[in-house]
Image (cartoon, rainbow, N blue to C red; front, top):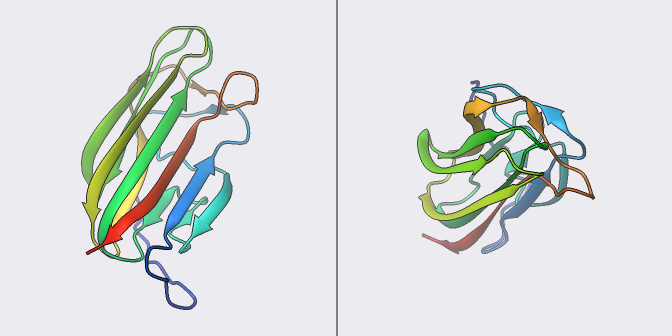
Length: 146
């Protein structure tokens, strides 16, 4: 995985860091892949980039991160939420009819540290994201600065 630096034009205003990223359609993913959500309706502070799927904290603080995973019917998938190289949560969507699974964590994140979602073991290719069955997404926001 290539690491990148965050270049923000203008200063980040206190408490104004939040992003919401989602897939616009079903995707085929593989183990070890960083999920690169292609729609980013909210990106205050410009920390999330859809081309590599990485959020880089523009300020140090306590953040809340949430991941929702929807696997296609009769498949199963597991992803991990990674904060600065440490797996902080596992999200698993089982072999049900478009079962949604979510996890939310609170973490200390320093300025410049990376947060991402990566496909872990046990998968069968299809990640669902559509208006009928649910949206696979990744979001985060600054709770308070340190």
